[in-house]
Image (tube, rainbow, N blue to C red; front, top):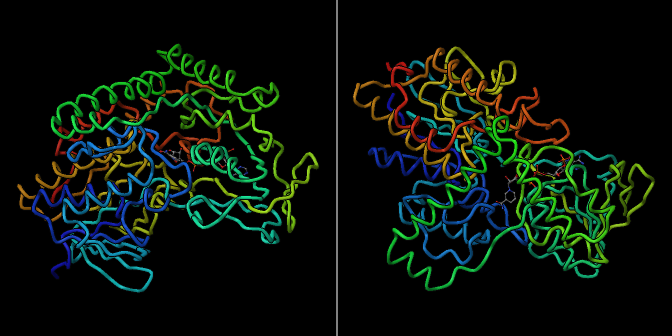
Length: 493
Ligand code: NAP
């Protein structure tokens, strides 16, 4: 049976769009991109809370082959990222392949027909030769089940479902969470609401954000002489690489670098927050890098405002109009903001049910064995599947380095498939095990295992305590592997 599509891509964020561009370069243009949301852009479409901006300088946080010379700031605001996604979709004519509001529930490999059968929540069935899942790492919002929350009569807003019409003026607001999202949002709510209580369970490392508007003449220079922007990207990449490789991945060998980063963050806290007890409460009790650190010049200072309070006692329950904490404090509130992040390890990985050869269920297999994927992209018994958001796939600090090395892997693999005139690829068990052993060994040097991370509650760790999200290599090593991996690591048939 001829499949309807060369490839079915799930997700119209930067990962899915990158995959579509890589496939088109190979001549595979009969592609459908299925997206759960009502427009493209992934996280940059879903998130539009006030204060949203990238935390990786924009010269780096973009496709290297589609630079945008017109970023307004060093760290562009979220809305510019959304516009950039639209621009890329237009430039590569991707919109015509996209369908929105389509929730993919299941994908099953049909071994007889050698194709993927994808089922949507509406009961539609699609068939494709290749399946690419690009469903994101942080795409399944997490809402804790606080006792009594269903009784709370005020307004509740999760940061991924921001209500742009909501006016905090005159309100008593509360926010739960102090992750990267909350760090951006807290100063904005504090400036609007009468009163803000921040419920913190785990403090976060925050370093100063060196941000500024990019002058028009620099934007014009980047547009006229693209080499200048490439040079800026190279310099920024080198800085990020040093932070990640030296400070995080080679923690055992270079503890001093990690300690310097922590000292910078501590000094930032000391000069920003006046009250000593608040400072102490905001000081992390785990090593820098165990959990993704954030950048902000406004976050700490917000705790000096008379209308902003930090509450570190744990939340016991909600009443119709208040939060009750373990220390007996009752905090009356009108609006509750949930900056409680995402569920990676229970409901993502994968974000839909995927059944491969011999009936192997990817989610069940990952949970009962170890989380694993060869080069963070393919899995044994899953022919013709490219799973972009896999364990050990995230390389470096900018998601675009991951996307582009996966595009390179995909192109090398599919070019070889074509050269052999084969119909399917499947990674061998041996290659997959060797890769898992290699990343496991390398991670032994990282802050995740060599540092003190036990109290960090970091989503880098899965339910078995393994730091199975990040690939423990430099981004240049990831790129090199993506374009030179032995093709004998795959079986072609
Ligand atoms: P997050 O880092 O997972 O933070 C969630 C917060 O909610 C944590 O402080 C967590 O506390 C708290 N929380 C969860 N359950 C709780 C409970 N039952 N009781 C009390 N507190 C609870 O999520 P996020 O802030 O949305 O950020 C996720 C990632 O998105 C970031 O690491 C970053 O990679 C990315 N991001 C990037 C940008 C950017 O580029 N500018 C902006 C925002 C986010 P615990 O720590 O104690 O669990």
